Amino acid sequence: MRAGEGVPESRGHDDHRGSGGDHHRDPARRAAFPAEEVAAVLAPLGLRLSPEKTRVAHIDEGFDFLGMHIRRQRKRGTQKYYVYTKPSRKAIQAIKDKVKAKTYRSTRHMGLDEVITSLNRLLAGWANYFRHGVSKDVFNAIDSHAWSRLMRWIRAKYKGKNRLGMKELRRRFCGKGWRFACNGVVFTGASSVAVTRYRYRGSKIPTPWTPDPATAARG
Image (cartoon, rainbow, N blue to C red; front, side, top):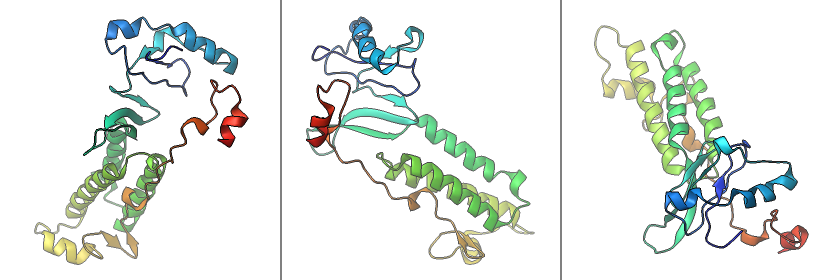
């Protein structure tokens, strides 16, 4: 592979992506990238490119893969560029839709503790998948969305004759601070999962391009 060339994303195989290099930002030039070189690398692995589902993307433009959005960006306050991974917009919308379904009017027959437990399990499972990305702000945003949905659910279920005000809502349905709680069950959400970033290992990671993977692994 020649230096500076973009790398096509292989959508023919479900679990393979390549990233673009520093040049060939022009779409027409990227489209002319020699996919045969990538195919030659994939062939020994038993993989192949699907011409219908293969496209070329520059790493600075970013692309989605397995729910992650991968893109190279300048680190705030510096002139250094890093590749960041974070939940894609599609993945974020999908979890919001699931939260909406669990707090829809059809679930108002359930107890508040049951709904909180269901949301906690859903959000913790989702966050565990994305915990290795730049996800902290996204987790907080998802929790804020879930809290708002849960607040409207509580107001609708327990409104009585008068509208349930925020002061009464906090007194009756919140534990410490503004965290909803019922029968010992506390809303923890996605932010309860700690973000754990992968350490950069660079050339120490064996790849198909490494002449001696064992040597590279030893660093």
